[in-house]
Image (cartoon, rainbow, N blue to C red; front, side, top):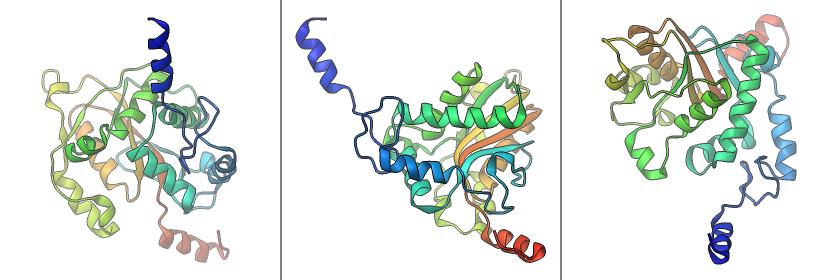
Length: 251
């Protein structure tokens, strides 16, 4: 490579941008500017929106038939919304590597020296993948797989059924998700998946219907244990209020 080519390569290299505000940041490998670092630090320290415990110690969020569900933070406030939005639409490899490492640490701290046969993901529809140029859940799963030292596998496929989950109420999400996902036939061996313990990744879980349906499909095809992981979780405010009333205090 000659000197001029090196210059062009340097210029073409993307400048790291803050995962919250998208302003340029100088620190390579750390996706937050100085101001947003404070916001991120507060975000990951927020308690569970349903039981009030620290998220790292909370086990109240269940996504059956997943054996356990892990998440980094509650999907509340501007910082959480910006992080999820940017991960979906304009994140970089630095962002996914950082978030995956934080999730990896959370899983290891919670479950010890746990092992998986592979990491898979809730697939994005083809329209979204074509529009933004990537499948965000796949990038997250791939980064997690590297940290666990296992392969990232495309075990599921999006059927192309129309409609966005975010536009539906909690009540109707369960009905809508039934036709959206199926097993990836290319991953089957003699009619079954050759993996017994799988980590299933997505960006955000609200009702758990999407992740739960994908987990059911995996188990129907031979997976014995499915563990769920997402960057964020949307707490059920009604459930939190019910717990508050029962305990005579507010979270």
